[in-house]
Length: 186
Image 1 (cartoon, rainbow, N blue to C red):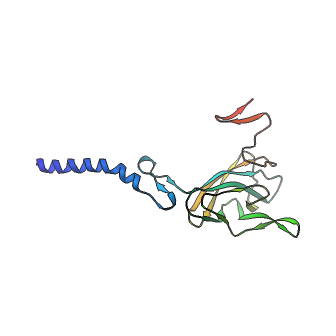
Image 2 (cartoon, helix red, strand yellow):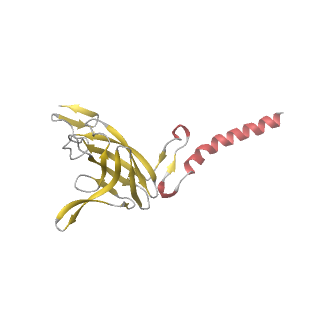
């Protein structure tokens, strides 16, 4: 009986010693790794999306746009190939392009994302276009969209809606400023 307990005890000790080492060595390609333990649901990806925002739509506007920043912290390139959402009949990736001296908005099939690069989708450049909105974009609201990448797969983000004339995310009412601790008035 003592030998059986000893083998069980040695196995338990060996498991306790090697588990943290195995978690640390569980590396994936392109610098991505999976976290274990209580954080097992979270996967750190090389591609991440930051500062997703949209302008409120005026009146009965049927189209709207969203802007965001895509960061590729990995060691290989990727490509944004689509955006999905149920906010409109169609969700497309668009860019403003010069056409015979006139700036025009055009659908693009995707956006290349080189390794280590940051792509800013902003007014006057690349953006997500919502064609045939099912409801207006209301200031202070938010909605989900899903970005589809060739390698990173799908990444869902929440888009926060700012004012009709917003030119960047986190535009606040006059008389307020952002501090490191959050929203603070002066």
